Length: 111
Image (cartoon, rainbow, N blue to C red; front, side, top):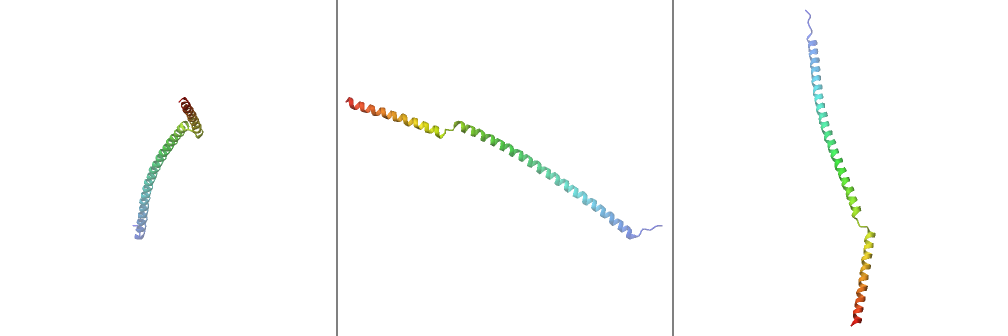
């Protein structure tokens, strides 16, 4: 009968144990990598959603600002317009003052 030396059996057993340990380590590593990849994908999806929301808010703010600028442009009184109105009011007040002066002079002569 052929006998296998004990050292050969020990060597083969140790090799098989090392291979099994390596396979288990690879499986655990693969599971960790897969979980890490899923977590990374979830974070990326959240970042994409946040970026889309930020873009939506930026567009809405830009649109609101454009409407505000248009409204201001339509309703804003320019300095030149205010100056012209002031000149007209001062002229009208001067004319009223002149008429009042004439009235007072004519009232003084009538007495």
